[in-house]
Structure formats: structure tokens, C-alpha cells
Picture 1 (cartoon, rainbow, N blue to C red):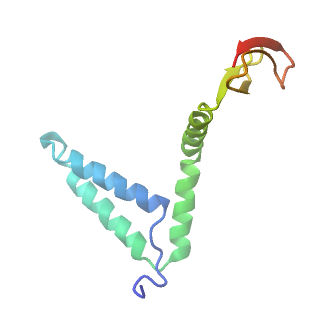
Picture 2 (cartoon, rainbow, N blue to C red; picture 1 turned 90 degrees about the horizontal axis):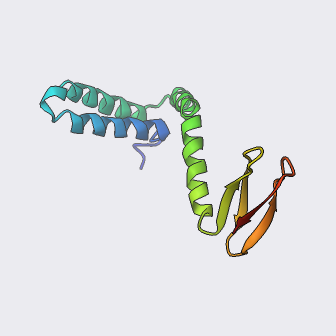
Length: 126
């Protein structure tokens, strides 16, 4: 417990480095991808260097830069996960006029839907 006191630890960028290390290591077992073994080893060393570093501000800046680069990808997957959870209880339709997504609860029968964006009405089953 005292050993890690004042050290940076694991963050999102560190987890990414470890995952990349594992992928490179597994791919290095193919004869024609043997060059990936030193890359995997370098990624492992760098991830441990970041974990045990006492320069917390520099490691946090690196993590923020990584999060900035991956924000769009993470946002896309978060939205998709949220839509999949909502599909258990709701239907999601697109307005035929403006393509706005509209969420309607399931089990209401045939209903008339009014788009909140363009005020277009259309009939769908819920």
C-alpha cells in the first residue's frame, strides 16, 4: 500500500497500452509477425513506467490527450449501448421528413407520431 503512495497508477491510457501489448504479443506468435514481440515488450515497459511514475501531472496530461483523441469513438459506442438498452422497452423510429430519431414506448398499438422537430405526423405501430 505504501509503495504506490504518490505514484500515478492505472488510467484509461494505461489500460489501452496493456491491451495493445497483449494484442501485439499474441500476434507475434505468427512467424511472419515476429517483429511485434519487441513492440509488445516496449509497450509493457512503458505502461509499467507510467503506473509507477511519480510525475502525476505529466501522466494525467498524457491521459487527457488520449481521452481527447478517443472521445468521438467512445461517444459513438456509448450512444449505441444506450440505444440497445432502450430497445427493450421502446421503438425508435426516424421521421420520414427530417430523419429525427423518435422514441416511442412499446405496446401502445397503432399510433400517430408527431415529430418534435418538424411537426410532421406519421402512423406507426408501437
